[in-house]
Length: 79
Image (tube, rainbow, N blue to C red; front, side):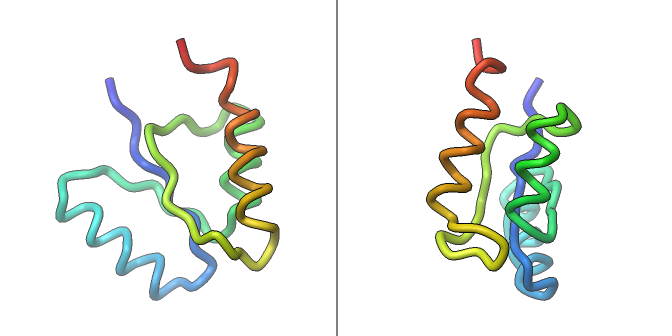
């Protein structure tokens, strides 16, 4: 059973366009407004997903540091 890719993008128009593009490719998409929102959902168990699409430079965090934190948050969940 696969889970939808998570798409973190603060720009609502860009977020919608990217989500539509991913959906046209056959993905189910769960979009969030910020990287920290996606991280929060990962850490408290509200979200599980197969892929993350985000910018390297995000408004609420350093994208590289955020990606590392997301990897740590999901480290125990992959078997």
